[in-house]
Length: 146
Length: 283
Image (tube, rainbow over all chains, first blue to last red):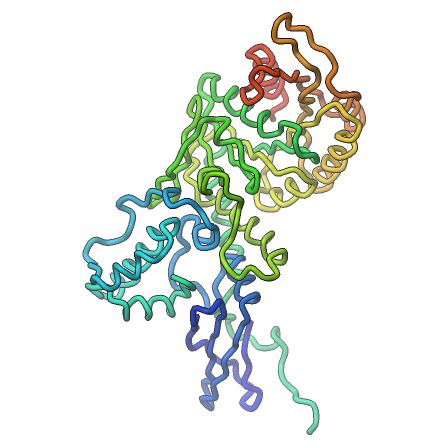
């Protein structure tokens, strides 16, 4: 998918994606010449269809996690996976508020989500994961509902 | 206002930032890389449900794994009605490592992955919201899960990976797209004419997709008395022999129904004959 600024005949550049948490998806694009911005808004079904393919609009910013699509999409048992020590670098700590928020994520997918947040934070030199960090990572990575 | 003139997708030469095709291609490459350590991938299929397909898949898996130097995995692709994990006595949880998801290890060391290990007891396969128009994307999600079962599971070096397909005609076609080097299919039927017609469609579909048919197993081919061992007819028909003749595919075994242990593999003698015949047709 490409977006073209018709006035400038320039391909618009991907700016950012937004997932407001209601099952919809948005992505903004900017013309590099005139700065004109447009937003693409997808309804829940379109969002789900793209998600079901295991791909991300705007490109992947993080390597695909093992069984990522299955764990994100399936309603499974709490003890299905043992993520053990594989939840990312230990140099990143969690604030109490962010731990409480993480605890609301279904256990079926929690270990994977935790690892994603920790790796995202570690790559940016962030030492503590707070709710604000989680919000930023969620938008950046497209972690709908996590 | 006149028509708006603008260039087409292919005329705009800039990179497609989402690179969705590249992402899908990368998924396929992950499957191929993971299966590099697997010598043979064989599907067990049937056009008809309730013929004991998973039972045969489990018997073949455990039987081959019992042979010296045979490492076997079984992937339960019957996502909605998974039974192989229980038949092979494999239990979770599945350990996640840096390499991927480790399969459960069942009877005689068979490595198993199944939605039975992921779903709550007695709960159906369900996906997250939205619940509307589910029929549109449910199939896509199931295909994606099957792809991940192939690519993201640490199967390790295997001599044989059996894929227990759900009933229906398209399973082997879908899998052939994911696993180009699929070596073939074992087809399971029961003796009845209804089963023959249904299974014939599935076999035709597999052949059209380029999946070689390795052999046919006629399950529940008779009722075996648990006292005297006599086998009497259970269904009217000779589907196994008929399909064998029609498609020129060997009938590997006729497996009798054993009422005393319906959940257990066939008696040792029958299982051994089935496994021997199966190994004989493996390329």
